[in-house]
Length: 144
Figure 1 (cartoon, rainbow, N blue to C red):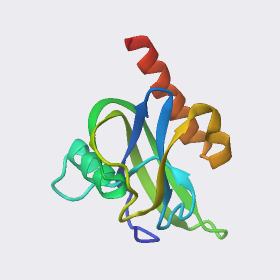
Figure 2: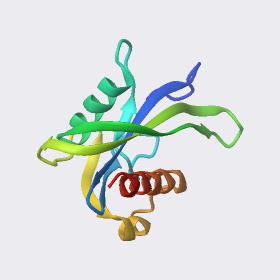
Figure 3: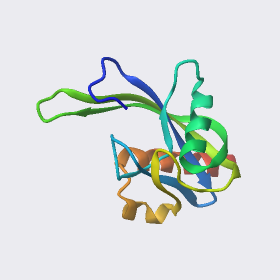
Figure 4: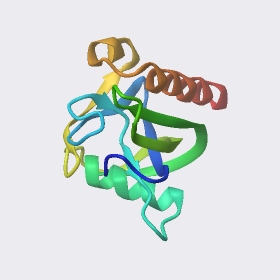
């Protein structure tokens, strides 16, 4: 993504659950380069949110997903030390389930792996991502 945008960028994120595990990717590009996060990325012109999410998950992980409910909509604004806005995303996170493919990190990810909820701390996942992951697990438990 381009630094110092003139307007917010719409992004999508996938909370892909498989039993008691969630899929994390290690970001290959800024922002969050080298950090563990949820798969996802920017919506391209003409794409629906769901189409963008399916494409981003496929590109980053090799997986196909079933896309469920919207879990969260939030702003991610990163500022420089002098207060300028380096990045501004409006992110829509969806609950997802694996539907096919083979897990393999690809284009925008340095790594991808299934992680149990108890292991999240070891991956230094952001507080926001951890909260939305917990929300997805709660939603899954209620629907069973």
